Image 1 (cartoon, rainbow, N blue to C red):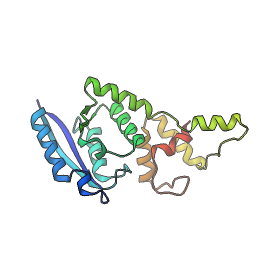
Image 2 (image 1 turned 60 degrees about the vertical axis):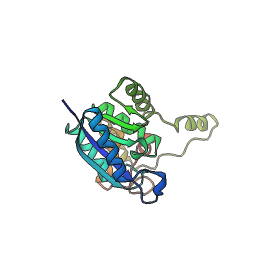
Image 3 (image 1 turned 120 degrees about the horizontal axis):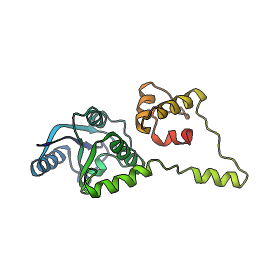
Image 4 (image 1 turned 180 degrees about the vertical axis):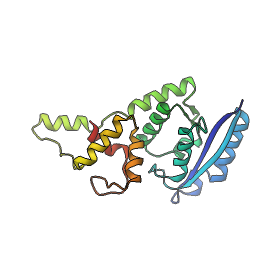
Length: 201
């Protein structure tokens, strides 16, 4: 039985042509891998957006299909087609593991459902829970210099904790807040997982 997967391809407007494969080249690589490995590419989603944000319609559609059980995972020709951010990658991997789907990359060759891929995935999923500012905050407290208080409105902070208590992933909470047009503490329009950790810790 073939393995249903969602292919994902992306280019950024500012990327130089010689530095990354084009959309057609990425599709061809995924199609060739599907034929060789027994996959069924249910759909190939695409974005022409920067990899520095997860707010991309194609990526969201691919992840939604996995959450809905339409596909077993997302396949990309190169891992940097998913994201340029290690933090965002860790969060994507964590969501995949918690949601029971896989992420597959041809370059480097990674499959979260394989033994080696699971080990890598578990490390990244654990990294997604780290709080990089905790050490800085502790150091300031020991030095008698308390860290900057959170500027997140109490009602928003309570909403974030409530959603987390319901088992929602950090990216899922961000998507909810972004969909509700809730401004970030600094007045921005896009919530990111790193914005939530100071509220949740």
